[in-house]
Length: 73
Image (cartoon, rainbow, N blue to C red; front, side, top):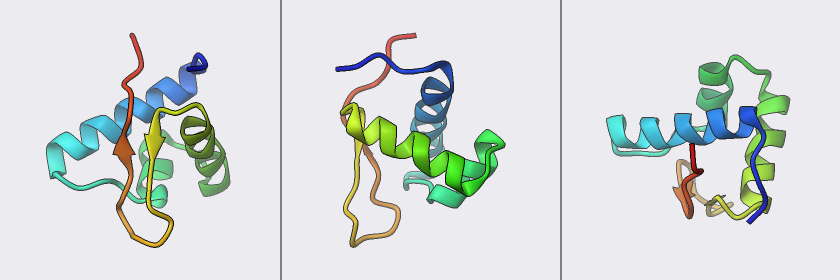
């Protein structure tokens, strides 16, 4: 799997933490707000995480992000 940028690691950590705290996946908007990014920038990073094989989701279901691989810190 490809290496993550520092921002992608931050977003992945946010998703993991959110899922652990709330037992559901965050929305793209919640990720953007949590990372201090615009929705478009957050979406690009989230898509990159998916493309690199770290996360996946069902396009037809809300809050369906699941972790495939955690980044090494």
